[in-house]
Image 1 (cartoon, rainbow, N blue to C red):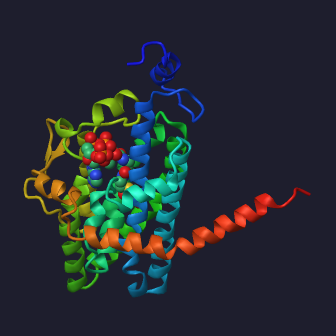
Image 2 (image 1 turned 120 degrees about the horizontal axis):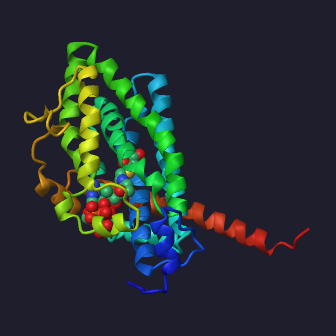
Image 3 (image 1 turned 180 degrees about the horizontal axis):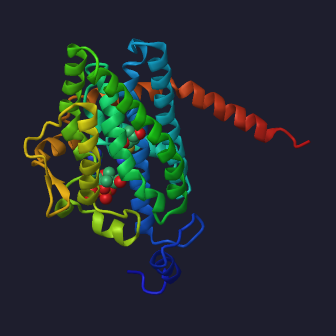
Length: 311
Ligand code: 3HC
């Protein structure tokens, strides 16, 4: 591809160094980064909805404050990532238009409902835990602005994962009813969390090229396996079980074997047929419309300031 024209780009990638916004890069590299970073940003913004659902119903002021801080962090993660996409020449308003029109994706995981308070714990422990496993390697991504955004985001994700684990620990060791609520939430969030890592490697059209460009540093299945191996002992510490009868340590492999994932469910959710797809996008479009006046006011203020003579 592009013999000679992008020699410096190829040499930089091969040397494991960073590509920066002003560097020459193949259009396909730029396009796949805009795709992945935009969908990552969309996931952060949509991901605010499931947990925000419980802010007004948090069981204590401490839990409410933690949840507000976490949801606010997700908004900030979205803004960092839209900013990273803009360094590639993408326009934020166009990326949001694509999301609202269903022409760009967000993570499947956010199309599931948060039915009880324990879901807030399961999301923190499992979903943010999966996000950390997926995002830490992205801190070594070949594109500088994305890698740097990930470094900042991963620091905040570790708070998200810890607060979720702590919330579940309190419930799991609480009353029998609280333990059951925690176990029910883990049962509902386990398999969708494994789906977050993407389709199996053999059905991932993007992985080979993404690995060659050192955007992805590990394959979907490698990171999924890493997540399972991390979470199994944590579940034991929580006193909760994972809803997979085939889950067991395989000494020979040095990893946990786990049961088959329902890829039909995964693809149905990606087609928009998940439990909350319509609700999540409808809420997002409404928020965008209701926020139009803020964008117009900010643009008018910026234009008036730009027109003001210096001095
Ligand atoms: N949900 C929605 N779409 C998914 C998906 C998922 N869980 N997994 C894969 N896909 C899509 C891909 O986007 C791709 O579609 P596209 O070509 O239209 O973009 C298609 O399915 C094929 O998947 P591939 O594995 O071939 O595609 P990628 O190489 O892009 O891998 C990915 C998918 C692993 C999600 C990768 O894009 C990635 O690492 N993205 C960055 C991390 C991210 O977006 N995480 C989302 C969660 S954010 C989050 O959890 C926030 C936290 O605070 C809770």
